Image: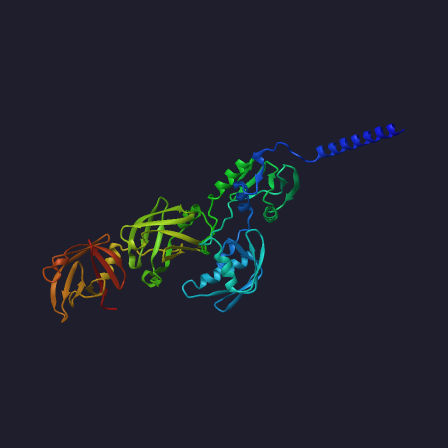
Length: 456
């Protein structure tokens, strides 16, 4: 009886052991695991994936000047003593337009505390003072840029597996958006292994999709995406998004008046009243100044460091020759800058340039007496000139005829001849640069003479 009992007990224990062994075999255990589909805690591909799904804090740099966090809506700011509520992306646009209105004047903006900020890993932090906000911002990368990759996104849903160091699966998670995946990564232990349910799909900023089937493919795609677009992480809130093609198209639509010129913080706009640019397809640009001044040059656009730039090159308007960084195109205006110099152009489809043609030059000169000076307004002598029918008389301050000669106009050239005394050195052809009713400017080589009307 005892022997029978012992045999039964042994049989039972053997059966139990076999059952346990069978259960163990059914656990998700991998003796061999594909390294190409598994990421360790500190792998480069996993770091790139973290950057891809990190919170992008650059959209509100106009307020906090930092791309590694954003301020949660709603909150308030004070601009030049006016309180504004910021509760959406649209509110940020209104804030930008408000600051644009003060572009030529001194302005201030202060955040009303307390506020809550969201970090790159979606951690929320309460901020009570300006000093606390500046302290957190100082820990971001200088210049506003951050480590997140914004030019590509993971297409959801996606499934992620975790394994322990023995390659036993410990979890399976389906994630629906960036915040879930970033917080999932934040909860990993140093010894955890991670695997995506490959293949996974990613979408570029231009909506092009690409598929990764291994970690190597994933790392290559994300590395390339880091430099695939302008992430707009800088603190230039006026750096609006547009393409080179859009700028090309807008420029040739109509002439553009030059309405603002600022050099080294000095407003020089009054000097350029009635200035305009006419951009033509093929790279030709014409600059029209006041009173019919006209000069031709070349224009081109390009992309430099992810920023659209406009290059101008004139023969006789060197003050505009530069590669201008275009930062705003909207409401019929184009704004650009180079270091401390700023230009603003305004579309004027009805603009008709005043052209210095022979008849208008001749008619205006014939109407009255004119005085000659240099560009500074300093007179050579106290002389006046009457332009009669092809005949010019030079008078001194007493009204006596001092000299006489002939003049004629051909195209935009004014020719003096027959002078023998004070103005003999001015015999020859002069290009008419400006031909206003009260003011004319003529040029011969580098010498410039201004004619000012004496009668009304």
